[in-house]
Amino acid sequence: MPETTVAFLGLGQMGLPMALNLQRKGFSVTGWNRTPEKGQPLVEAGGRLAGTPREAVRGADFIVTMLGDPAAVRQVALGTDGFLAACRSGAVWIDASTIGPSAAREMAEAAARARVEYLDAPVLGSVKPATDGTLTFLVGGNPEALTRARPVLDAMGQSVHHFGAAGQGAAAKIVANMLTGTLVAALGEALALADGLGLERDAIVRMLMEGPAGAPIVRMKAPLMQSGDFPPAFQLRWMEKDLGLALLEAHRLGTALPAAAAAHGAYAAARAAGLGDQDFAAIAAFTRSVARGPAGPERA
Ligand code: NAP
Image (cartoon, rainbow, N blue to C red; front, side):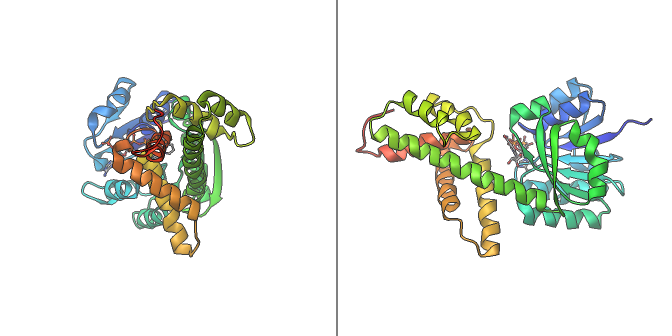
């Protein structure tokens, strides 16, 4: 049987381990990344690298994109050397980037004009699940295309949830990240308040992790906040983007999201203060520095 060919566009923190899993599990992968050096491990694993998105997708059965934001997906799909014009008719485009439902529906329409099946398939899980092949895919789009794409998704993840028509997987993802982002911003504020009250940090972090507010994300991020070291798994600038996407949809629907809006403002300010490339748990360091203020207590 001929090998199933996959073009993988966007070999960043998430995309590279996902593409490596596909290559290791028997797919023939051609990758592309704006910064080509990041794709070298794919070549070492037996995959290929293309010079442009258009070149990468030639003849591919599936196209996977794992790009930063809606502008990046638009650019790579429809811009100069955009891949949609070069896809073979009937190919399936799995868009794992988090871009929100409006942009996902826009991409589904562009794909349909190019006779390509579009599935929005953003993921739950960070770099470790991407490496271990245990991501969760939140999918919107044609069920028949999803059935065809299933072996590709199964090589990168452990579960797939189909939420309905194009855009609905992207919608589910921003609901999830709106809650996660708001929760983690609130956790940073809780720790800043604890600091101000003179509470011992280790004891407070333990209490929060063991108590009713100790959601899995709190248990994951509280120790990072305690250490003050924020190596990026999920960059803060992407959380700012995701809360922005949630607010965009809320505005379209006429719905108020006051807590998410406040959290979005905090992430935007933290990014402007230079923390955009750090893990989004760095929101706690920003909140602490603001809470301390010029005349505040001297607790590092
Ligand atoms: P990342 O490491 O920053 O990778 C972003 C990718 O997008 C890189 O390949 C980057 O290329 C490319 N890119 C950005 N702007 C571009 C443009 N204008 N044109 C072409 N390529 C462009 O981020 P990531 O963590 O892998 O995240 C990728 C997506 O997954 C985001 O939508 C994020 O929200 C989502 N996500 C991330 C996580 C996580 O834990 N990291 C979890 C779930 C979902 P360069 O390498 O050249 O910069």
